[in-house]
Amino acid sequence: MTGEQNMSDTNGGAPGRAGGLGGMLHVAASLVWLPQAAVIAWVLAALLAGRDSAPLLMAAIFAGLGGLRALLNARAQDALSAAATARIAALRAEVIAAEAATALPSSLGGAGAIAALAAEKTEALRPFLMRYRPARLRVMVLPPVILAIAAWHSWAVAAVLLMAGPLIPVFMALVGWAAKEASARQMVEIGALSDLLVDRLAALSDLRLIGAAPPVIAGFAEASDNLRGRTMAVLRIAFLSSTVLELFAALGVAMVAVWVGFALLGEIGWGTWGSPLSPFAGIFLLLLAPDYFQPLRDLAAAWHDKSAADAVTEELDRWRDQDRAGLIGSGHGAVARPFAGLSTRALAVQCGPRRIAYPDLDIAPGESLALTGPSGVGKTTLLRLLAGLEPPAQGRILCGDTALDGGNADAWRAALGWMPQAPHFLDRSLRHNIGFGAPLRPDVLDTARVTPVIDTLPRGDLTVLGERGAGLSGGEARRVMLARALHGRPALLLADEPTADLDAQTAQDIVDGLLRFVEQGGTLIAATHDPRLIARLGREIRLEDRG
Image (cartoon, rainbow, N blue to C red; front, side, top):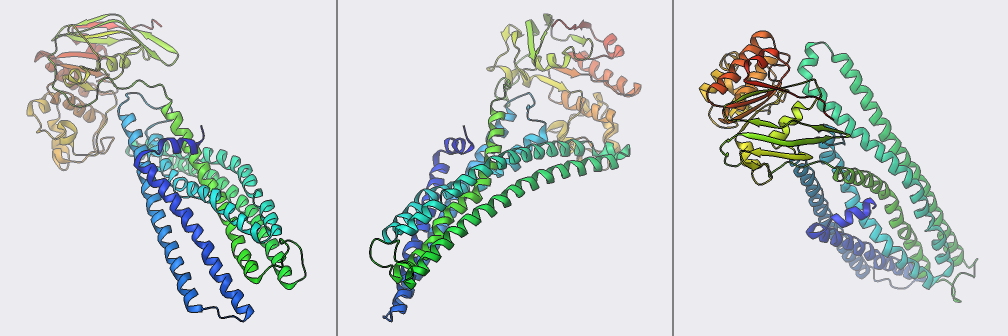
């Protein structure tokens, strides 16, 4: 399906009606030029013949028609702009809603690529919606009407227009294929550069500490040069096609002007339907000839907008066609269900071409369990399955005696605490990053050893953290993650490598905090390689690659 078909199919409802109205108003505004040209031709013909041209009346008619044309154009632009804005907003909402409802990353790239798709690339549809579709409607109406008027007065002029006009769409299509490929390559570069920018900004403080600024700058320079090259390739094609199309349009208008001039001078006696060409008809045809080609030229110029829109639409289609499991449940807040134990039966998950099968688990309330095994065996994936963040390919997860499904997943997750391996923060205060607006609990701060961290910050718990926890060391960030996981009084805490890459004292603080949670009646499942943590938990289940 082409980009134009996709946009037509998905641009329904009120935005679609507004866009259709805008196109029709543009066509109507273009048709107003025909009587305006007739007024000019009548006045000039009257002056040549020495007749009274009623200049005031004709000027008033011409001005009135001009005002009508300006009004129609303004209304058309308003309608098209509103339709384009609504359509782009709907696409952005679709991308954001779909990404929020899935727990797996997109195959298009990272957060930068998705952000570029939702922000920059969807904006590339605006010129298509505002220029290409109205131009296509004008091509369907205005040239045939002018061709019919030309044929009424002169078959020679009609023949010139009929021969020169179709060459423009032919060359437009030939050049458009190359423009589409160049636009697609440009969109890929935009996504790659956005991913690179997000990645480097996230690690900016670390890069500065290790003195990696020059290589990072060089990498940005190379990526931006690649994008500039792709952009210039699109512009070269656009300028080349514009030159070719302007040539054919200029030749067509020049041939009409030459024939009309010789016919009015009496040097040519053929080309009309028997009677000599009148001054009114000659001037009228001269005024209409440029407007015969103008819609074709507008369509050719907007063809590059269509090429860019096709590239974006194809990327949107690839994004929609991804086979990604959605988040179980709605993802909204719910009342936590009491924790009555956790079991798995014949659990398996598909990770690309690889299938991971897990042993059956039975975890009772108040128990602590260490999930161990070599890297890549699926420990983190199992935690995600137990949290209901993605569905298994096979088997069941039992919350007490009830199978975990979309109906109870939100209530199940409300009773969970999650401590990820890589700390993630909002660009808000430390207080908000722990409690999400709720008052901080002193017992949680003490359990996670966060109070000394707060004391060292310039504004205490009101200190704003970046998305990577600027101002916090790796161990301090891990303590904040533990405090966040414990703050909601979870019945079950899932911890992914909670002591990885920490110094001995910080790791001991984290282990003590986790065990204090268990001593207070909580249930803990930790994926870990740390022998100190494994030794202090109630039992160990080692995962093996069972394929």
